[in-house]
Amino acid sequence: MNVIRKACSPKNFMPGRPGGLRPAAIVIHISEGTLGSADACFNNQAAKVSAHYCVGRAGEIHQYVSEEDTAYHAGSPVNPTWRLLRAGVNPNFYTIGIEHEGRAQDQWADEQYAASAELIVEIAQRWSIPVDADHIVMHREIRCSKTCPGYVFSRERLLSLVLAAEAICPR
Image 1 (cartoon, rainbow, N blue to C red):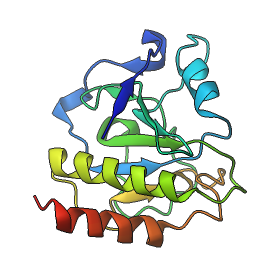
Image 2: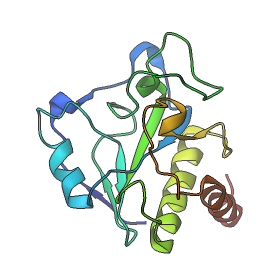
Image 3: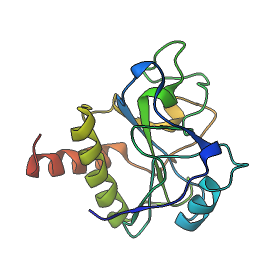
């Protein structure tokens, strides 16, 4: 898997993770734009947002923030439905954020699903994150005010690809 490291303004993430927290889940997002617009946004110090990764429609992967650092991707919870949300703890502190090129109404390309699945397998193996719907979280499960990652996105399809890839490269 080829991951291209991209610049991220130091104002858009926090070095490390407070209190010794480790990544325990992966949050799936839609960028509401292109891969290039994600590159520009995360490197703009006025944005105050970031993600660890963005997966392009053709399967390219850009990394903005180290997994050991805190990206500003999940925001404060708004009517959350995620079962594993930790009360009083910012979800950015214990999650990894993956943006995906496109808009909420767009179907994901096969290449995008495949690259995202491969990336998730690698992250999950590095951090011992279980691969299930509790640990591969849609952003709207944290902030119900968002449509993210869109309503045509299929978490079931993504999870099946992750499980198939994990079977090829078991932990």
